[in-house]
Amino acid sequence: MASVSASLPPPLLLTQRKPNLTSVQKLPFSPIRDRRSHSMGLAVKASGKSSESSDLDVISSIQNVWDKSEDRLGLIGLSFAAIVALWASLNIITAIDKLPVISSGFELVGILFSTWFTYRYLLFKPDREELSQIVKKSVADILGQ
Image (cartoon, rainbow, N blue to C red; front, side):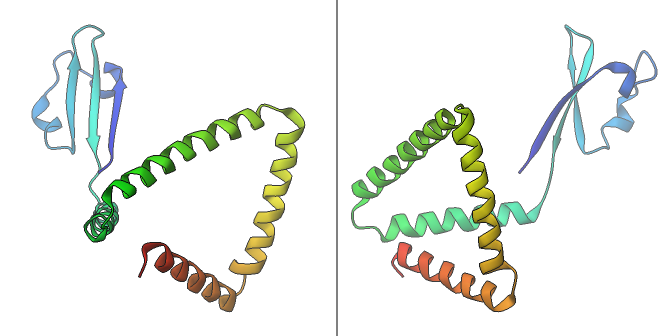
């Protein structure tokens, strides 16, 4: 579920000195008053079914992997190693990005690879179906199905 917070000055929300909050309470946000700065903040929550269902799918698949695993200590170690590898790779990419010539070269390689990948797998329908089969096979191999 998404949420948004904003702090707006009073003239944007209210035209009078004392607001009539009965009409405001019917709207899908809740007003929050800040006594120090005399501004009004808004807390808005979005309601959507699609993000919740996808989150539930991810959580249920993680629970299935956890329940089917015989070596839970190894699974914890593997997930910790994945987090450390992600952190290290982000730091390496940040350090490389600070070098002026190398970052432009990597950007060029990225553009060329993206162009090739689009031409090879995404442009025509049979190639998209082939990519879909490759991804499904890879996911099945990783999850051991």
